[in-house]
Image 1: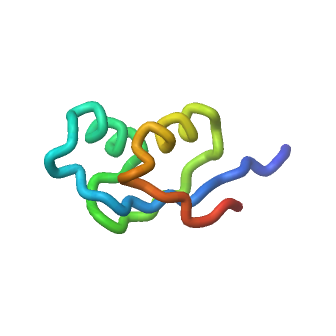
Image 2 (image 1 turned 30 degrees about the vertical axis):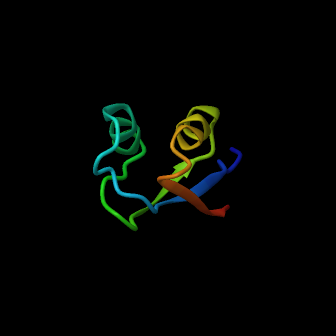
Length: 63
């Protein structure tokens, strides 16, 4: 079985005063507080969510 690729995503922006859609995208990624880091599968859907809110998250590292 092949090892799945993952990426580390860090929240760098606050969801305060952001549209509800952007808040829900953060929650969908498992982020909701500043400077939290999550390890997520590198799939097109996760990439799309990250690309929708590039001002709130950054990719820390690819594995």
